[in-house]
Length: 178
Image (cartoon, rainbow, N blue to C red):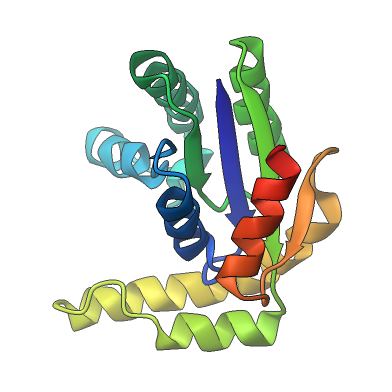
């Protein structure tokens, strides 16, 4: 059982890379760890910062859901998810490893200027301009924090140049998995 965790700032290309990995290796299963966060956000109040990652129940839910998917479907997971708080990464990865899951952690390193351009160009909610603007502003506000996270990644993290073409990044991950 294995999780390929694609980490990096918003706009780093995690989802695009995850889609390419699955296209190249259809046996992989995509797990969007934001979905449990959206669910918990509907059930309990968010902490003052408004980030569902600050909820311990989200971090536990990510581990439980990942393990359930691995056990139920017998397919390795690709998880494109920004997590830059070291204690949260330790908690999630430690929880997975304690349950016998191998975690391959990749961080897509992209310069702040490129990230800002990508975030400005993306439309997350094209049918809801107000919500789209809120999400864009939140993502842009996270750029510096996410870029700084590259200096405090857990041991064993593979740092990739997120400005390379997605095909090259997918090939690097495939070679590292062998």
